[in-house]
Image (tube, rainbow, N blue to C red; front, side):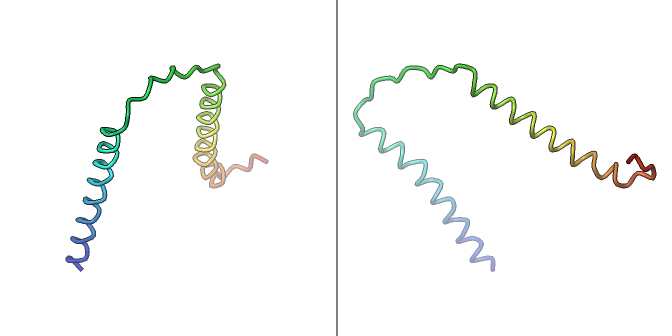
Length: 77
């Protein structure tokens, strides 16, 4: 079991090293590209990101509050 785990670890390290080295060698031989203009934002992506964060907060709060409400001795509804 230990030998299999060690060989799997070595394979994972080799994959990471090759994954880091391959793009670096490819970019060294590629011709220089002209710089791209900076992306401009009209605010919709920022608004969408804020909406996603607020929906995630609402979901987390719902699941945190629901067990407290379900185990409460008081009948609210």
